[in-house]
Length: 382
Image 1 (cartoon, rainbow, N blue to C red):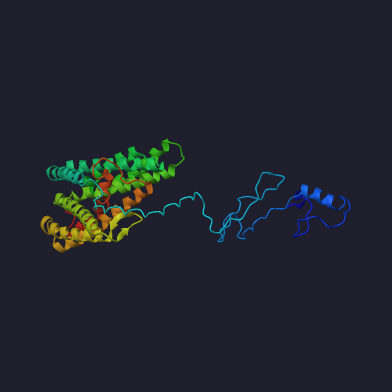
Image 2 (tube, one colour):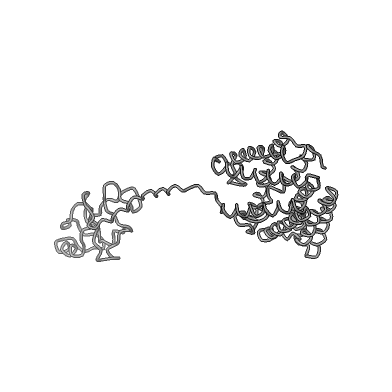
């Protein structure tokens, strides 16, 4: 603070008349000078000590201090000097302290649910089962047509989601025509016809995509070849199972074991599931559910192979059931991986309670070649 704003400093501790002699450039000393000097000056106000803590915070001594710098007299003549606040001073209007945050009430326990419309799922499943069994045992060609239609719809769902979520334009027309041809060729000519149809479908995908700009060509045709193998080619093994003399029963056992495996995994996992099987891929699947799938599929496999398959035995059914449980689970995880990459929950909405066609084919498609091969090994291809 500049002392010149307060006048010449008097002698420390004394505010009476000056007994000093004249100073160079000042009025002569004496009573007249002292009286004149007293009229022009006043004592400096007592300013309380400022706490050494810094900032605008009050220390433990409860001293009040301003929120800014001390004003000069010549800057604010009406300002009153600061005075110390007694230690026991209480504010006239104390600001109420905020209430302590209360812990959030715990949510009421919720009943564990199945996570989907179980009634609709059962109704749709029963309806599909009736259509499949009726076509399977009445006219085999009709069942082949049902498989071909399912393949075409599955291809449409898959390519549509790829385009919507990733901008990948896999050619649907050659895939749909070639996929249906694969299923028919597999039923009519066996594995040889299926491989030829697959090769022609791949060539058609490559040529069809050439009609569009080259940007993204490799990406689109790669997705198309993947779709051709994933949906129609794997479905062809169902048609090849149908070629045997007891082909209808083989297909029925294949369908029963896959459905039983999924049902066992769902029921056991929903009721007893605790440890996650693959949380980064499918958070709903548990290790307990996998054990349930294995147990249910092996039991059903032993019974079905013993009583429905010609020359089949129960121990063969146990192995087939174990293989079905593993392949069905891997197929379900595989499609879950695709859906996680695309950022979707279901491939479609065509089947209430189930999602889309691909959401029902996910475990059937990879299981078909496994069951076909095991039947050929155990009981032959005829």
